[in-house]
Length: 185
Ligand code: SF4
Image (cartoon, rainbow, N blue to C red):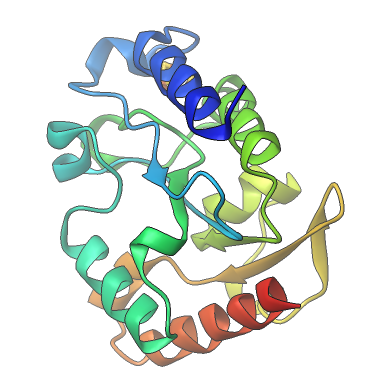
């Protein structure tokens, strides 16, 4: 089956999913979107308010920051695939719980194995936790050699962190450039 069709099937499964209790409070599940042959998958934490309303990833303020960072790194949304560890919004944007991450990870794994990217970019602590299992500070993970089943992982800050520290945007751009270099090898 073509990658596009397989991703569509996964998205349908996500929209119907009731594997965890977040299904009760969501407006829309957010499977993710982007190129089916993307060399880079960007993995955020979970949908926020705007994403829950529209069913699309990174469409709020953090999405605008991400778009700016992608552009500064010479990338755009059409070249990458954007998704998150949790596909449904936790109430009041609270942190994801471990059982929710465990319940949702099979969707992410299906997306990764379907797209077969060259690089995974973890956006924020929970993006990283979804891939490496452990919870560590971003500053400790940035620049480290990490991989997920042999696919290199680039860990960077979540774009929403820019709200509190504008200076982090430069670091996100640096990390996206690194991802782009790894993907071009
Ligand atoms: S968060 Fe994931 S596991 Fe939980 S209901 Fe939504 S799609 Fe299913």
